[in-house]
Length: 103
Image (cartoon, rainbow, N blue to C red; front, side, top):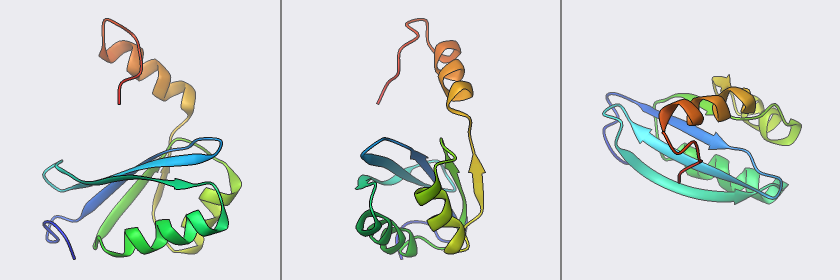
């Protein structure tokens, strides 16, 4: 196990056509790991293996309702917080004067 397990971990996933960007933070909002996984069965298996290292996992915010990713995470028993991509884009515009997506 990595990081501060007593506070738990939170995950954010930015869905993409071919890959998904994943960020894991601890209870103190410190980034513990960032990586990408391909949108494939092998990618979902790699995602499950990575998430298993961070327990307790409190929830996953995911910017999509796409089948393979959502179905896989639900089958693994994770708590999901789906985020409408339009809401995410609107938040980014309000968070910066520039109005552009940052990494």
